[in-house]
Structures are given as C-alpha cells and as structure tokens.
Image (cartoon, helix red, strand yellow):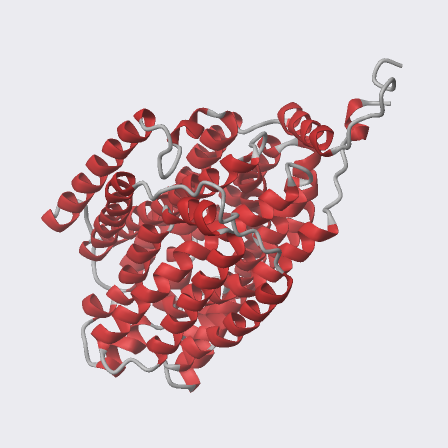
Length: 490
C-alpha cells in the first residue's frame, strides 16, 4: 500500500457545516464590494458631489478593511472565533443599514468605514475557523468552500448592482446585505461551537505597538495606491507621501515583530515555504487578476458603449468559468500539490487575455464571452491552489497569522495592480476618439498578460505534491487515536 493511501482526501462533515455557516455571512461582504464598484457614478450624480469625492466610498472602506484585518489574530485568541465572527457580522450589518440611510456623501463614507471594520475582521476569521476545523486534512477541497463567496461575487454582484443602479434607488445596494447578515447571525449563534477561552486561562494582551505600526502602514499604502489610480500616475505628492510612510511603517513593524516574542502578526511565518510562496504569488496576482478586472468592465462600457447592467452580464462567463474550475482545482491540489495547477492556471489566464489585446468596438461578443469563460477557468485554477498552499504544514496557532499575511498581501497586491494598470491605460491613450482609446486598452491588456507570465514563474516556489501529501499524512497521523500497547512494534 502506498503512503498516499493513508491520507483521507474527504472533507469532514463538521468542517463542511462550519464552512457553509460562515459562507452565508461572508456573501454579504463580497456582494457589497462588487455591487458598489459599479455604482460610483450613480452615487456621485444622486449625491451631487464629484467622482473624486465619491471615490472615498470605496477608499474609506478599503482603509478600514486594512486596519481591521491585523486585529483578527489577537481577537481570535482573546475572545474566540464564534464571538469575533458574530461581532464582526453585527458591525457589518449596522454599517450596511447606516449606509442605506445616509443623508449625504460624507455620511455614506463614514458608514462605509464602519462596514470596512466588520468586513476586515470577517474575511480572515472565516478562513482561520474553517482551516482550523480542517486540521490540515483535505485542504484543497476545504478551500473550495472558503473561496465560494469570492467566486460568486463576480458573477452575481455586477448583475445585482447593475440592476439596482438602472431600475432602483442606490440605497437598495446596501439593503441587499441585510438578509445575509441576519441569517448568518442566526446560523452562527445556533450552530457554531462556542470556543470562547476559559475565564481561568491566560488571555493575550493586545500588541499595541504592533498595531500602531502595522494598521496605519497597510492603510497608508492602500491610500497611496488609490491616489495613484485617481491621479493617473505615481509622481504626485499625495501618492509618494503615503507610499513612503506606508513602506516605512511596514518595515518598522517587520523589524519589531522579528524581535518581539508574541507580535500581533508573526512575520517569521514568511520564512515557511508555504506561507512565503503563497503570499508572494497572491501579491503579484493582483497585477494580472485584479488589475485586469478593472480593464474588462471599462472596455465594455467605454469602447462598446454598454451600460453598467450590460457590462455585468457580459462578465458573467468569467465568473461561471471560475466557479466550474473550483470543483476540479480543489481536489487536484490535495493530490498533486499547488505548484503544477497554479502554473497551468496562470498560463490559461495569460493565453485567454491575449485576445483582448486585439479587440475593437465591434469584436464578436460571443467569441469574447468564450475567452472570458476560459479565463475564468484559469482564475479558478490559480486561486484555489494558492490559497490552499498558505496553510500546508501549519499548526493551529499559526493559521490565524497566515490568514492575515496572505490576506494583506492579496489586498495590497490588488490595490497595486489596479493602480498600475489604471496608470498604464491612462498614459497609453495618446489622443482623442475611439481609436486612441482602443489602442490604450490594447497596451494595458498586453501588460496584464505579461504580469500573468511573471506570476507563472513565481509559482515554481509553491509547495509541490510531496510537501502537500507529507503535511496531510502528518495531520492525519496526529489526529488518529494512539495505538494500543504492543501494536506499534508489531
């Protein structure tokens, strides 16, 4: 019998139950993000403010998200997963209701910040709780459930957002979240295990200095990158200043964390192949994956003249492809490791982006839909194994830290990639008229293709089959009951 045969690839029903309970609440966060992204111009018009002001509806949310994410490691250890999850979901619910009742642009921005605090806690907490429940077994299959909200969001979010913007008041965008939050709270309250630490046990103190360095560092980095996209370049004081401050704070936190016994986030985990490689790939994937997600709806709206709803419909094939490939990528990751699947996924993403480097205003919509479907399959083949790789070989106490490290890398990489491609697109449009705009999109899509190829090379660092199977076997052995006396030596 081969060693691999001792490794159980099936997802424990208890893990599946936990994942489904958490996914319901997490859908509110993902839908909210994708719905609001298609409604900024509508908000600017209805609230009588320039787009530069209403952009803070997104920027404020992202800044609050970045500040809240690092707090999840301490909160989980201090209060327990169930309590933190229900608190975060309640905060997001309050922020959603407040956003729907906002009386002007600045009140809407303030309520979006409240939402960001809740969402920033929810996303890493969800991943941590599910991965801790999995105990190192069937990580690929388990990740398919953790990633479900992120896969459904791009399919349904633009459709719902486009329909609301076209036919209803913008306030309904935030009421969409309410049913998910309420049902998620009920399910969590009834079915999630109570993991609150015992009152007699030691509870960790908040690493205040770590928080003071890390949270503002992430926030100012995101602010600088957001300003770069809005200013169409990186050579502006409102871009250079925040980026410089953000980088300095993050470097200072890394030095501090390496010397501190129990830091807010353990950066030493980046030395582990699984965490370091997945964080690096997730950061670079922001250029090829998230940056291109900026270009695609803009192409349909600016070049083909589609409405927000029509652009959302045209992007559905990509979401469908991602959803389909997750069914294959997750189980395959458990069998052959993350490396091979991620390499193939990035190559598929690159190849299916190339046709957009030649598109025009009258290119076949059906042919582009086919390429988007293929691109979606590649996206699913990238996200599943890379997310899984971040938890290979980790013990229970390290999972929360890995969740924050990879989430932060993905968030900053996504902001960086979006800003870079926005600048490339703006500077590639050298004249007036549709022809100049089309040429600009061609250049930007070529860059997105190139970033995918660079990410392909970086995937070689991801854990392969041997590392994944060895970690799964070790986890299964640790979870097995001890053998009766005399059996071990027989």
